[in-house]
Image (cartoon, rainbow, N blue to C red; front, side, top):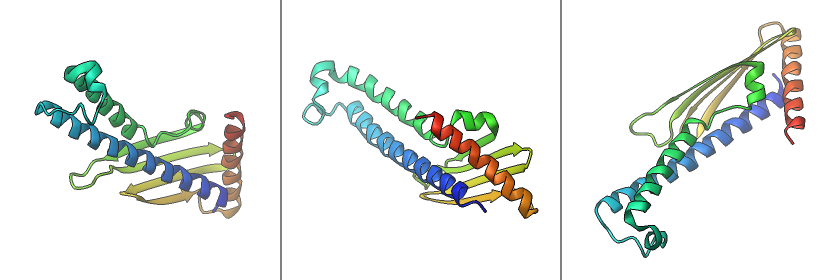
Length: 160
């Protein structure tokens, strides 16, 4: 197994989970504000902007913020577009009622002349499981890993 690919996809999974967690906390915060505004509570002491835009304007901003953060949760597992163009990418999120962070099931498949590398990451809460597979032949598997590493290196160098 490739140490570089393992490190790359572990970092990717950790960052994706962190993005989902941060966005989920923001959604929860804004949903509480929305409920309090609906109850006609005076929040001008906590949210000074209410004095400028009023409760109706604040409610509009709160609804937009909730939608934005929910979109961030949905896109937290997105991969680099160039990497996505090089292979097949699929990600699904499963929301369980008693869990704060949705579960993710991400799969990526990269084909090269040397072989196919399959990456699968499944998450539950703040934990994840990473599986890298390039077939049973160790020589072709290593070459396939190296090909994907080259592409990741090129993407990293060209994105700065």
